[in-house]
Length: 252
Image (cartoon, rainbow, N blue to C red; front, side):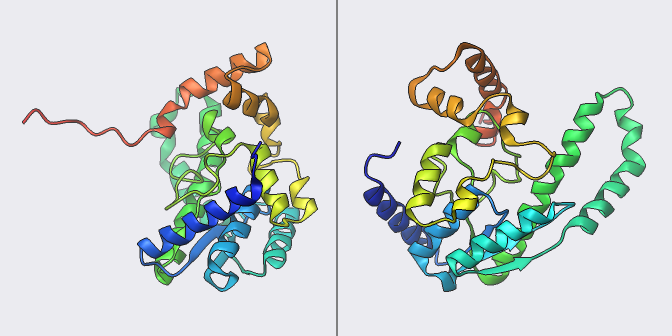
């Protein structure tokens, strides 16, 4: 856990402010799913830049109504504007067009890969939307992924793991909650079971381990034996998500 929360938050907000000034941009856009991570980043951004320079966007895509309600709760609590851009029809159009032709090359592929491809398309559409808006406003896109998610690869490449900067990427889930509580994120959001709103299960149900176990592994290098096996396997196969794009080095 963070030893000096007041000092840490001050340093994060100074870092955000300095980066926005360095890039000569005018504010930040943040995807607002109504979850703890985005809520904490929104609160940090408001503290760093002022609420008038923070824009949040809810992007439902066959989403449950409760998530939109929670997104509004977060934006109201932080005093920032919330735009709602429904991507359901956009996603459905894309899926329909791909499904017309994809069978020609995927006949022998595992069915689960198709399901995952559909699920991962949604956060990629959301990130495209955030960058569309951000470029129009000369804003940056703030990332909202935590260290536990990154360690086990529970992110979508070019989706939720894409951003211009990430103020919580070095903090575990419990530490993000600690920051959120300090900044006054609503209790309902703090206590909400982590859920990406895409697969009908909580994050921990999908992962097969708890965030507490992942955090313990991140901080100490070990946790319960069975959980550690799962975490290590996920960490290994998702290593490519945490590395820069490999580029071939020419001979001369």
